[in-house]
Length: 151
Ligand SMILES: [Zn+2]
Image (cartoon, rainbow, N blue to C red; front, side, top):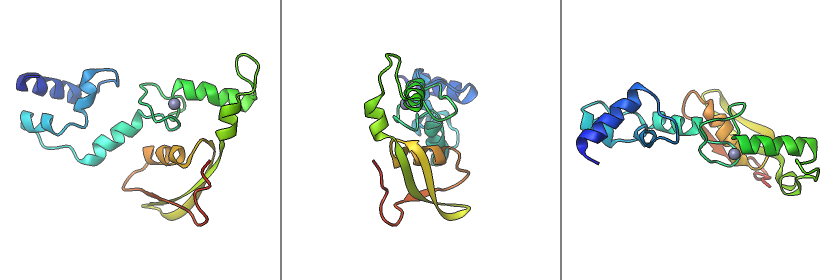
């Protein structure tokens, strides 16, 4: 890619937020683009927040469309099947049902330190991603006393 093309793509991504399937998507967290365009560097939290905004909390895949702001279409549909107790063929979704549980973790952010329990989820990472997505500042996650009790 030429420097001119890099700068043009980076400026385009700044002007109009790209979707995850576009090549410009990678410009959002890029440090070369602003350097080459003579613009100030974006702080790291911006790139991290942008990446979390389009990451499915359950499967951690990038998805341009998150249902309820948390799950990709596939995880949302599998979650509904698990809640109903049967999939489209009428069978119980055994693998997902076996993985769903309540997960605990310790969260440290601007509001202090607290233990959070959420579920049904497939792991503590799902809870951490969901919480981090809405964080307003630095947020840390830790293991609660007794362990994560993570599936
Ligand atoms: Zn997913």
